[in-house]
Image (cartoon, rainbow, N blue to C red; front, side):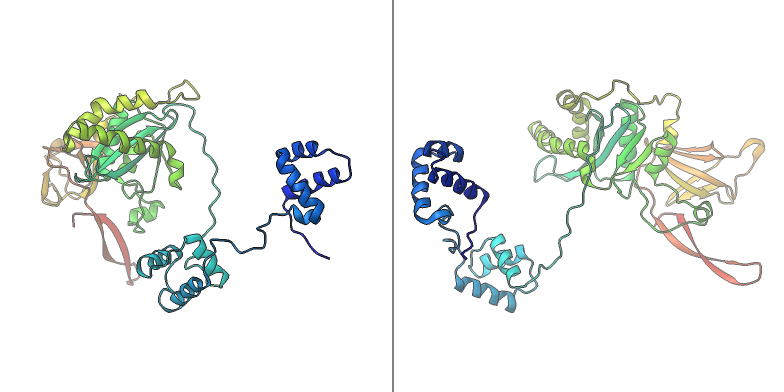
Length: 418
């Protein structure tokens, strides 16, 4: 018995024409049911009367495609894969065939050819991970998304800068933005200072795992080991003191607000900077802060789901102390603290007390000045110096003698210039 392969549309047409052949429907009724013109219906009816249901099937079914890859080309491609291009992935292989061998072949055609011959893909592609849509925060100030974007902001021949920005998750407005030479601890602290002064202190920040925001090293100091947790980064310490909870984004898709902001900025802000002839970082920040942020918020702000604003006031906080680069140091015998080539002299305390051997907190503020704090009280001040990136950390191996005389090696994590 012959088997006829038919699509559902062809099957429905065979049923309609069968009813016409039995005299139960007119050809016009069948044409309306099939969605065809009277002429097309008559043509199909003649084929049905002559060949039965097989006459309804598409005439090209079972025939080789007119644009089918020639047998000689198929053979040549398989030879080249076996001889020269065995380590190439599908896209790389197609490019090599077109550019080096003069064989024009589509990527999908090539992929089907290789898989049909049992040639597996170079890398196994993982199925896309299921992701659930995250609803925007209902209130302004509940969450701020922040990130950085490296781009040639003043033309392809201009310098590369990082645009750092914080965008409110509820309505998409820019809480603050600035240009910086790089995405760093210092630039994030400056961005945070602008957010706090412009709109207030948000409840949470949504961020990626950049090294300036999250510790990714596996080194623990003795104090951290005893405490059971690592010290935060410079930015993390400022967030902690401001009561802002950081939330880590697990994928770029989770930061939709900030990614859309950067898309608009690369399109509009870059064009405006070029139009105004701005080429310096200082001038770009001046235009960004004085005009462009307000214009962006006016044009692109959405309506938040709830009217209450959750930004907190910063009037009761010492932002000068909180928004700073922090270093832990031990005071030398001459009551000085050293950070690289900089020496900070600590004056005598009450009743001429000495701070030698005391553990102090040294901070460089965003205006470049320095302060030394002992037990949360400022005991020394130093004029401004150029602000550099925080001193990098390195490992030192230290030995101590146990009570039973055995020697044990521990790793001590500390900060000092390298």
